Length: 437
Image 1 (spheres, rainbow, N blue to C red):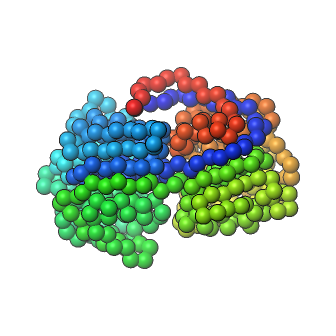
Image 2 (image 1 turned 180 degrees about the vertical axis):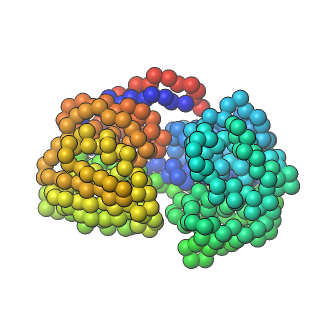
Image 3 (image 1 turned 60 degrees about the vertical axis):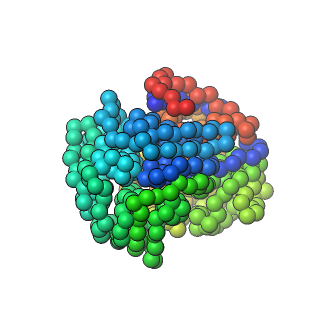
């Protein structure tokens, strides 16, 4: 586990070259958990092997008897869960949100699952009630222990109907993986269908689950008691692709971004064009350079983030950055996660008096040719942290970003990719508790 990681960044370095978008974090970490329900060997290609969240899951799987082989050169994982069994661990302090996705594999292989509370600790209001509902609807007993959640289903899950009271990404993922272990029909109502969930569905089909999607919120799953192995390609990360496009434009660099998943980010790219960015593209790549700015400057804009196929909330910080460099006032609204604002408290250190925010709304006051000033700032949420890192890369002088491990959680080989673009940052770590290899 990486703790207290600080990045020292000299701003003004101009990126030049190629950068390849890695496999999507929000797909890869789910596929890793889903691979545990297979009765054969699973190979996940285009897997972002350096992601912190993925390494936490790998550590947990190994401690419960599963085998995971990491090929960092070819960016692949091989998972064998034949010996997977629920064990009592010395520690359940795993600071990741999607621990609940580890349950279906453990239930199938041993009839019992002991998993960390999402986020590592049981603090405040429960943010996992919908996951408990999924397991209960599928016939399991749940006990909330002091250090972990125990799910008990000695004969495995049973077919049922799951009707979510609200649209939920994590709940949909949990229901899909759990239902795929059942030799019967399970229906999921008010499901959330995103590109990453479509990727998960494709994987579950590849190992033998029969899944029918009707419209954008109803799913019918007929699982199997025996599920085969698979070789499966992780989809490219649409949020990372947007990150590199925005950084390339704001830095004045000349960057070719490879493996851009156009089909999953059509509307976000339309908004970039409406901000005056006329980027070059072919079927898989985007090239950005100063010539992409139609009028030589970014145009101010208004947009709202919410659910796919629009601009998802994880993308919001990068449009805020664009607004800070546009020639006028821009407004960004967030209806799905209106309190995603903590990173603004750090961005304003780079852009004094250039940004205002309140619940659900951000206003930026951009000006042509503006360069942020260097400072010291902290990482907040994962994507907001990357926006702060980009601000430091654009700033005049040298900045320090504390707790930058938040950004490393979501960006595979970030430091290496920047170096391949000719941009160097210094990463200092105070503590390394363990390392997965």
